[in-house]
Image (cartoon, rainbow, N blue to C red; front, side, top):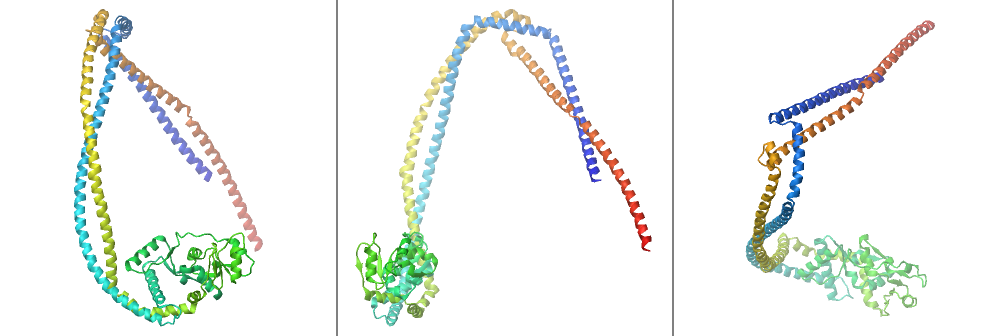
Amino acid sequence: VKKLDNTKKGLKNAEKQHMEHEKEMKQLEEELQKVEEERSEYEERTSEMSQSEGRDVALEENQVNEYNQLKDRVAKQAAKYSSELDRLSRDHKSDQDRLDSEKRKQSDVQERVKLKTNELAEDERRLERLEKYIETSEVQLEEQKGQLVALEHEVSHTSTRVAEINKQLEEVMNELGEAKIERHESSRTKRKAEVISTLRRLFPGVYNRMIDLCEPVKDKYKIALTKIMGRNMDAIVVDTEATGRECIKYLKEQRFEPETFIPLDSVRIKPLNEKLREIKEPAGVKMVFDVVKYDPADIKKALLYACGNALVCETVEHARRVAFSGKERHKTVALNGTMFEKSGVISGGLGDLKAKAKRWDEKAVTGLKAKKDELMNELKEIHKSKDVKQKESDLTTLKSSIMGLESRVKYTKNDYQATRERHIKSNERDAVTLKSELELFAPRILEISERMEARGQQIEIIKEKRNKVEDEIFANFCTSIGVSNIREYEEKELKTQQDRARIRLEFENHKSRLQNQLAYERSRDTEANVRRIKASVGDDESMLSGLRQEEAKLAETIEKGQEALTMYIK
């Protein structure tokens, strides 16, 4: 059933296409007939027009032949005039090209002069704007500098109070019992603690001091690690070089002591020499990097920078052997702090190293931090003051504003000078050059125009001579066709013939296109497709009828079987 429905749909579409095809062929036939009728009407009109003027088509064709013969005679007898006209025409065209070129160039230079004039006017306006901006900015700069002096005085008063508290904090830290660290060292420790705390608060990219980010895996390595790291123990690890520069700028502004920074993004390190981990003799030789624990993992580069490929040995003798006895020299350190440089320099200082190594003691560091936090509470209270923070922020902002304003004033003055000394003078020179160049065009254009005018008169004289020869040869022909001279015939009659030939060609082209299209449409047998699909529909309907009869028989058989089964069960 579904197949039959689809076939019927196909038949419907085929019949529709056939109808459209028949309609299109009919339209093409009608259009072709219309073109034939229009062609016949045109030929009748043309014939009537020729007859009304006393001529027919055959006569006009004879006139054209006679015209061509006479034209050949004119060409021979007026050859010298034609040759002279060709030469003069070539010269005339060359001069016309030169004239057009000169006028284009003149127009281009005029436009460039106009552009330079506009640029000069814009430069003058720019100078006025820059001068006004400089004047306004310098007044604003003086005002801000006065505000800076007043604000620095206020912040200085707060700083004096902070210095007094720091002095008290130094005295408290001295009481911690750091017997082997001088008073000055305690003060520096306190100051360094204050510095790192402030920097971590102000700049998110500050990690901490190296000593607070790592520790030896065993106590026996404390002195050796202290010796190797040296001043890098107190170096501050930061994420980027830019963060480090900001910190340095802040320390200078706050007049803190200089600090060493290790920027993770730009610090230069040497890769670990893996072969050094394979040293078996003497026993116990390890890379210093391998005996250090660190956190977070991000600071690995900083630790590599501080430790390098240095080796730690159990004894001084072992350290000397490893340093100097092999093919290559190595930087080594013994557990007691004796260090051997590749250069041969040997350094020790056990007493001082022991005192510094105490800083690795975790319990001591934890206790010191707790005590430090307690003693710095009062200092923090001052920093918590909104007024102090606001003034410090205002001071930083004001300094930044002054620096920015000074930079802009400097740039603007340079711009003003460059505009006045370079741009304006350059445009003035260009304008003078262009105006001088522009003055040269008028004489050249006048010279060419005068030459063309004189040549034009020559051309007219020669044309008259050639026309005289032409009129003598075409005299009888012109009388027979009723025109005063052959030019009139050429302008009128030949144009008529050319127009008629063009129109006839258009009719032929249109007719040919329609015939080709009609032939193509006739080659498409859409009716055969309809007949084929109709036959297919008939076949499908016959098959469906047979299947339905068979279905009815089977249904009757099933019904009888069910009745028999029912009787048997009873």
